[in-house]
Length: 334
Ligand code: SF4
Ligand code: SF4
Image (cartoon, rainbow, N blue to C red; front, side, top):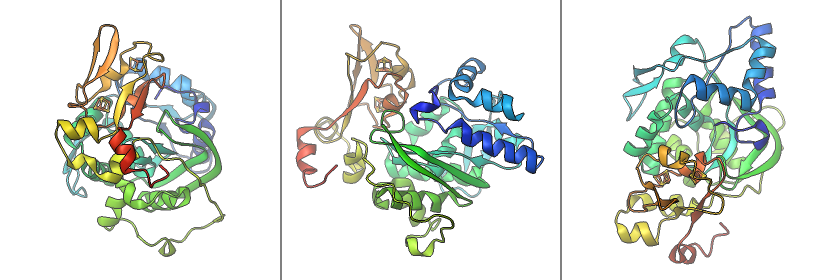
C-alpha cells in the first residue's frame, strides 16, 4: 500500500536495507524487492508505492533492483491442499529464493496478518479480489493463504515488529512500539509464536488454526525452540472491531437477517470520506455504490473481507457491531 513507513502499515525500509546489504555484500547475491498491492499493479502505481514506502531509496543505497514485471502466470501447486493451481505474479520465477518481510499487525478479516498472509503479496493486484470472492469464508481463505505460502516456500521470514499495529489493522489500526524482530525459516510456526506473544488465542486466528489442523505447525509452544531474547511480551494487543465475526463464525450463516443484525459490518464515515472511490473499485463483491454523492454499502452482498477498510487511504471505513452482537459479546473484553 502507498503509505509512508512511519504509518507502520508497511515494513520499515531500514530492515529491508539491512537485509539487502547483507545479501549483496556478504552473499554476493542479486536482490529484487517485490510486492503486489491491492488494486492496480502497474508501473505508475508501483512508482508511487516505491517512493512513499522508502523502497526506492533502499534500492538506490544498496544496489537492489525494484520489480517492474507485472505479468501473471498460472503455477501448479502440488503442495497445496485446495489451490492446486495458483495465478501468481511472474516475478517469483526470476528468483532462486524468497525472503518474506512482513510487519506484525492485526487484520480485520483474519484477526492477524503475519508470515503466512504476507505471501498473498505474490498474487497480482486485483486478482486478490478473485481469491477473496471465491474463498470468502475465514477458514476457506485461511486454507487458500496457506496454499499460497506453500507455493512461495519462503527461505526465511523476518518479522518487523519494531513498531507494530494493533486494533483495526492492517492499515487503520494503532501504531504500537514493540521493539522486536522475529525470524524463522518456518512461517507457520513463526505466526503461532507471534500470536502467543501478542496474546491472541490461535483458534481466532484462522491461518494459525488451519496450520495446526494441517500439521504445518505445532500446537504446543513448548515444542518450539526460540533462540535469542525470549523474554518478549508484546501484550496487550488490541483486537480488530470485527473480531466478533471470526469468534462467532458468522461466515457460516447466510441470509438477510444474519447479514443485517448479527455480523459486524463496514460503514462509511461520510465526514472523513473524500469520495476517491478506491473502496468501490476494490470491493470484490461489488457491494459498494456511490449514490447521491455518498458511499453506501450493501450488507447483503458484502462478504466481510474488509478490503474497503484496508484500502481506504483516509480511514473512513469503520466497523459497526449491531446491538445483538454487542450483547452476545458482553462477557468478552473485545
Ligand atoms: S476509499 Fe475511503 S475516502 Fe475513498 S471513497 Fe471510499 S470511504 Fe471514501
Ligand atoms: S463492502 Fe468492504 S467488506 Fe464488504 S465485500 Fe466490499 S470490500 Fe469487502
